[in-house]
Image (cartoon, rainbow, N blue to C red):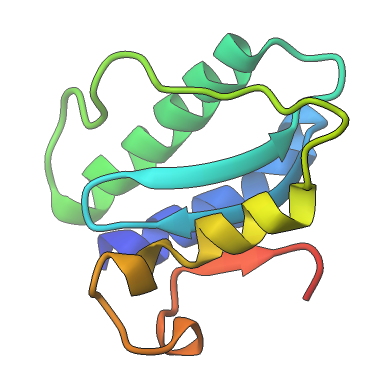
Length: 114
């Protein structure tokens, strides 16, 4: 299943690039990520994540070519923003999207605070 492949890619990715994945949720047609990029450029992080995951996802479904749309949407956090509140919002997306009745019923998310 593609969501399982992407979940594994997200889990393994931070170690290879020296970032910290704080929180993530996979939705049917997109992903929400909360990343501490440290000294990396966000565009580099996203390009490498999309490239490595596209290879794995395409291999898992027997296809080639572009998997992700070009670009991404980002929001840089300010020091005064509540990072755990933002993580709760990200984790709650499947609930708000009507995919589950309880956040714990959705398998494709994680947060470092668990």
